[in-house]
Length: 107
Image 1 (cartoon, rainbow, N blue to C red):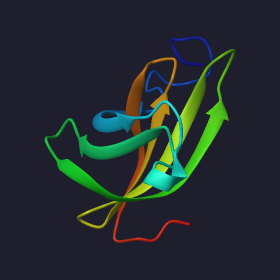
Image 2 (cartoon, rainbow, N blue to C red):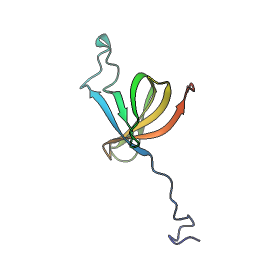
Image 3 (cartoon, rainbow, N blue to C red):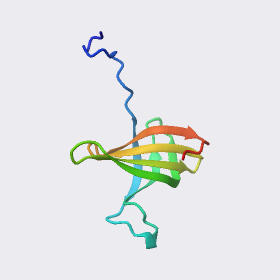
Image 4 (cartoon, one colour):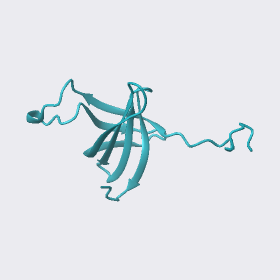
């Protein structure tokens, strides 16, 4: 058994990378004006200094994570053909990188 007494090593599950995401926020969706989601990521800045511009959002889905909180999962394609799965955490009020792949189609 480990030092924390729970049978797990001190190396805990790797935390997702926090991101700075420049995002437009709309009070409501307006399909006539091309606003399909209330949150629309535009650019992403990573801790290592990499910058990505969003070309296309492929998927959206909300996941409830406790009383009154949710994760907004977004799968997107950047201008440099990277596929990113990012999440907005309403409890932490921030964006996090879940998955990254270069040049691969995620469905």
